[in-house]
Length: 64
Image (tube, rainbow, N blue to C red; front, side):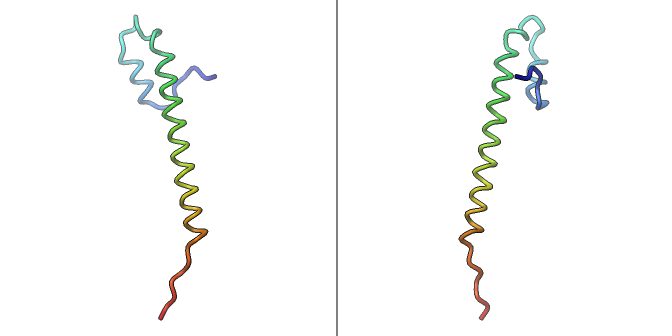
């Protein structure tokens, strides 16, 4: 399991806390980042699947 942040938002969020409490919240912020990245991956997967299904059933219109 990684101990560093991937996104600048969560790194900055941790840095914005006072130093004496950063260690308390570091794990929660890392978990929040993992959830955010996982949700992003799920949304991208659903979007790609939806687009693929749309292309699969797309019938070109006939020119008159």
